[in-house]
Image (cartoon, rainbow, N blue to C red):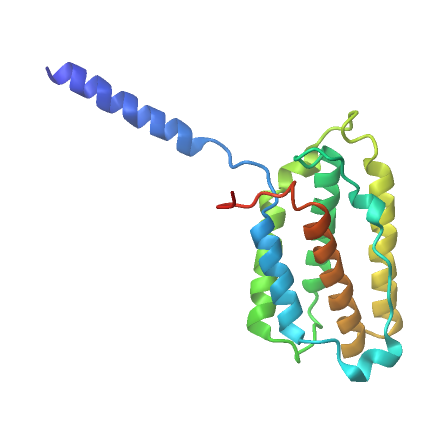
Length: 191
């Protein structure tokens, strides 16, 4: 009698051990991106009126995130979002960020972006294939876009208003990702 019970218990244990040891899926969570967007928006409030004179508007390269009508994100689209997150992390990992921003919201924003990068790191390894053959074009557009943001930041000597321009541009970028890719992102607990 003890042998069947032991075998059943061992089988159950091995099944759970196998399931728990499986790698986490590679994904970008829409709910976390939505939270990051809200934190970024709220950490500094509306665009400051004192910065309106030097306001810079850098158009987001929409083709860098062009998607098909399929409900999954293509390899090159997922890779583009991953690169966007890495660029955002690079900007907001700087040491000279404005002290006028709500530091608790900024910290939480940085943690979410870092978590998203960590959870979607596997897309960086997507091999160039038919699915990702357009990635070099997307990457070049994103490099130019984030280069322009960095140039504006440097041109304005990393001033508070320059950082507000960065915050505004990144906020618009996150909004764009959420609107144009909402059917492709993972949304836990959504129907």
